[in-house]
Amino acid sequence: MEWYLPLAWGWVIAAAVAMYVILDGFDLGIGILFPFAKDEHERDQMMNTVAPFWDGNETWLVLGGGGLWVAFPKAYAIVMPALYLPVIVMLLALIFRGVSFEFRWVAKPNKSVWNITFAGGSILAAFCQGLILGGLIQGINVQTQPNIGPQFAGGAFDWATPFSLLCGVGVVLGYALLGATWLNMKTDEEVARRSRRQAPPLLAAVLVAMGLVSLWTPLAIDRIWDRWFSLPNFLFLWPIPLIALGVAYLVWRGLENGREIGPFFGSIVLFLLGFLGLAISTFPYLVPPHVTFWDAAAAPASQIFAGIGVAIMFPIIIGYTVLVYWLFRGKVRAGEGYH
Image 1 (cartoon, rainbow, N blue to C red):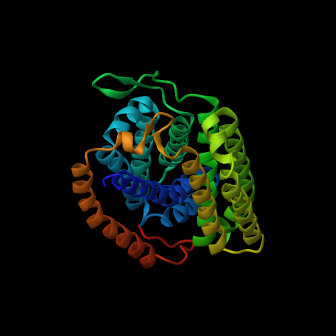
Image 2 (cartoon, rainbow, N blue to C red; image 1 turned 90 degrees about the horizontal axis):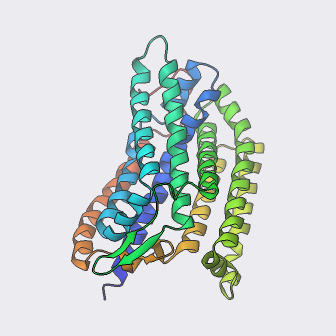
Image 3 (spheres, rainbow, N blue to C red; image 1 turned 60 degrees about the vertical axis):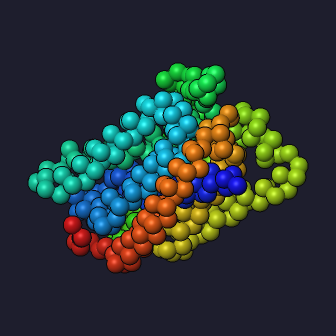
C-alpha cells in the first residue's frame, strides 16, 4: 500500500519548486532588470518592492532540495554528481546576490559594485537554474551496478549542451518577464512605465523560448514524442499549448490596456503551464530516462517520518507567505521603502 507515498512526496517537491519559481522568479527578475534603471533612486524603489519577501522566498528552494534528499535519496545521489557544477555556481550566485542586497543599502555614496554583483548574481543564478532544468530533461547517464543500484555514469559536463543553454536563456527571460510585470504592479512613475514597456518584448522572447523547447524535446527524445503525439494522449494534451498562447495574449492585452494585476498573474500562469508541460513529458521518471519515483524512493518508514514534519511545517510556511504578502500589499512609490 506504500505505492502512494512517492507520489505524495512528488507533489510536495513539485509544489515547493513551483512556489520557488514563482516567488523567487520575480525577485531574481528585478535583479536581471537592474542594469536598465536610470539612477540609484529607481534601483532603491525596485529593491524595496521585494525587501520584505526576498529571503523568505528561498525557503521553498530549501524545501524542494531537502525533500528530494529525504524522500528520494537514490535520485539525489544521481542528480547531484551529474549537475554539481551548475548547482554550486547557482548557490554561489545566490549568496553573492544576498550579500549584495544587504551591503548595497549601506554603501554610500557609490553603490556601483553592489549593483553589478546584485545584477550579475541574479542573472547567473537564473541561468544556472535553466541549465539544471535542461540537464534533467535531456536525461542523465545512469548505469545499474550489482548490489548497489543505479549510479551516475556520465561526465562532469554532460549537462553542457545547446539544449540546456537554451533552457538557461529561457529561464532568464522568464524571470525578467515576471520581474517586469511585478514592477508594473508594485511601482509608480518611471519605473512602472519602463517595466510596462519592457514586458511585451520579454513576453515575445519567452514564447519563442517555450516554443523552441516544446519542439526540440519531442523531436530529440522519442519517449517525449510518444507521450505527446501518440493516441489517445494527443487528444487530451493538445489544449495545453493553446491555453498557453491564450494566456500570453491576455497578458499582452493587459499590458496594452495599462492593467497592473492581470499581467503579473497571467505571467505566473504561463510559467505554471510550462512547468505542467515538462512534468507531463518526464513523468514517471524522477531521473529521466531511467529512474522512476518508485525506484528512487526511500523506505516507507522514512517517508512517513519526514512527511509528519512536512505536514506540520507546510501550512506554517504557507501562512507566513500569505501574511507577509498581505501586510506589504500595495505600491512602493518613489521615495518610499521598507528597508
